Amino acid sequence: MNELTWVEVSKGAIRNNIRCFREIIGKGKILCPCVKANAYGHGLVETAEVFLDSGADWLAVNAIYEARSLRKNGVDAPIYVLGYVPLDSLEEALRLDCRLVVYNKETVEKLGVIAEKLGKIAKVHLKAETGNNRQGLAEENLLELAKFIKTFKNIEIEGLSTHFANIEDMTDHSYAEVQLAKFVSAINLLEENGINIPIKHCANSAAILLFPETHFQMVRPGIAAYGMWPSNETYLSYARKKSLKENLSDMDALIRPLTTPLSPFCLSDIMTDMTEG
Ligand SMILES: Cc1ncc(COP(=O)(O)O)c(C=O)c1O
Image (tube, rainbow, N blue to C red; front, top):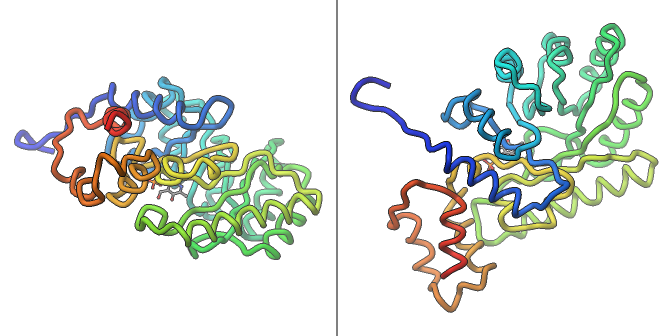
């Protein structure tokens, strides 16, 4: 930034967004907004503090340096690391009390040794590959890894996650539905084999807004926590679900986010606006 350009962030709007998500998911579910990438450019620590102050339970980061910065600045909320943690960062991750996503044996082995050395319990979240093709394991490999983890007394399987590949890109959500079905199937397989997963989670912004059945025990909103609709397609799908068909033609809904000035830009304002037609 220089003297000719600056960004003003409305803490009030961010607070409203978090409250709005709480209202959508209800009490008793973990609200874990993403503060990765410098809180989507809004400032990591400042945003984290506003999120937590407004009712967020956990924070999601992508990498250990972000968790380090949060801890250094006094944030003591649970931190979930979405991205891969290199083997030589595992010790710091544990010292910072991070929850880690795991999908390979070498991470588990090293984590087991470090957790024992530190006298800590490492909390891990398995990642199911359901169609995003980025991280994770297909069902049979997932079960094998879960059984492997069970052999380490200092590692606890706290969660199971997956991520939608294109839920915000289309108004046809059939691919996301297939992903959700694969996720449920993975849950069932693990549970049938005696592996209980307390926290199942898969919902990003679009999933939270469109599909309550994706909320499970925790949600991970990113872009919408900052007041942005994930896409015009999400807006349109949301409007359709709210039965606004009578009031808005599809074309109106499509062009509206681009043509309607909204200030301050705030998710809850838009949603109120939409529900009032
Ligand atoms: C694993 C994971 N969960 C949640 C999110 C948040 O997604 P969104 O910004 O679409 O809400 C992201 C963002 O990339 C992600 O990678």
